[in-house]
Length: 591
Ligand code: PEP
Ligand code: MG
View 1 (tube, helix red, strand yellow):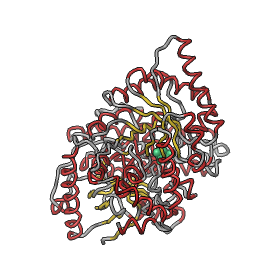
View 2 (cartoon, protein in one colour):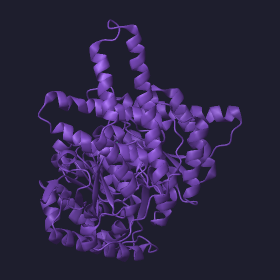
View 3 (spheres, rainbow, N blue to C red):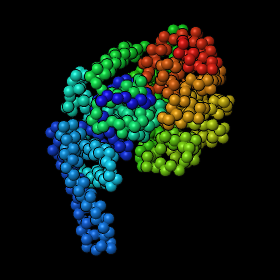
View 4 (cartoon, rainbow, N blue to C red):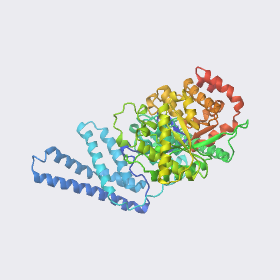
């Protein structure tokens, strides 16, 4: 039966495919396709892993038997029996073989997929004891996965398979491996999401998350349809169901009828045609009708994104979120050399175009490591994140500053500092930058010049620009956080997502004021939050005087199209009117 789930639109476009449900804790399991000739060896890998766990349990049972009943409580021996039984479970074994043989999933992916199928059945059981066995199943699966880690994979992961284009009818009838896959999880951390770059998945759905949560931001950078905040989707959708993601409307359609499938297939083709049309603008300079040159820059997460940014027509990187180099490493931070190489790769990847590297911004919804989230900090978004975290650990910060300074010797680089608010933080930061230079001088290591900018993403910063303009060469407005902190709306919380409003008059006033004051002082101002890539806001930002936009590479051409159609001499007066309106969104809609 067809039904729809409403969530938040994150990344544009339509994806149609089969659901792959992944428990949040297991997303870092490898997901790749094997070759048909590798099916047997992949099944062997599971067998070896399972046998290792069986042996371990048998050994434990034997040692307990030798100890007698006092040290071998009945509950423990019974539990081990249950584990042995689950390991021999016919449905588990048959299911895993099915995913490997018919879908060509690698062994770990097949095992976790089948775990999700069976876990769902446990959830639906009336009997509490049986429902409780789900935890045992999860435990033994984890053990098998761990045991398999010790078994060298007989296969080299095949590159993500390109999915053949199919007609809608084909899609309905199809039961072969060549269909797009849509990942569904309760939650994904930003670093989980990053793992899926170049992955096998054609779209993503999560139960939780806001539109400008960092998970959504990474999903957008992957440029594939995604919906977040689609509550309960991971419970309502079953493994292998057909699903449609409408990334424009934020809707997920489950088990679509042929008519609905045909309709969305049509929409999907329209989207592809539109992309084709936009690609003609690639080499067109971004100049408005009245001759204003507009700078369209890219936001990137990893150095490897740089060539893609150049290809998408970016004239530089306006925001390199360096924290992604620090995340998902079990708290082990990258050293100076590793960071230097990464920044250098980004700079070289941009082929002479400027790269703005933001110092690490971890904390809030970007923990260094999922395992390190202790729940002790009640308001992490107001806590020790971004520059506060850096200033709290000067040795770590100096390491990053030295690495960036060294990389700046290889091309045009700018340094961007996130979340500043106090003059004392600014002075402290500047002192550490000076110290990093001195340390490199003392070591006799070469480094390059850096322009230094501040992110304006806290209302208090936007209201006290004088001190920022005194110290910094440029400003970059982080509208994602500026909105979060102005409206007191957690950007990662889908339950208040409807109140997260870039067009709130207070937000517009802070953004416009920053642009105007920066320009009056002759200091470049750019916007690098999600507002910069939202085509419905391009003309408003141009009307406010913005001339530099930084966004996901995939958004550049659509924004350029808006720029080419705009006349800033006419937009300034209109922008004034929008800002003075009680409800700017209504006035925008009328324009
Ligand atoms: C912002 O806050 O707008 C921004 C660009 O930084 P981040 O999204 O990484 O917090
Ligand atoms: Mg921010």
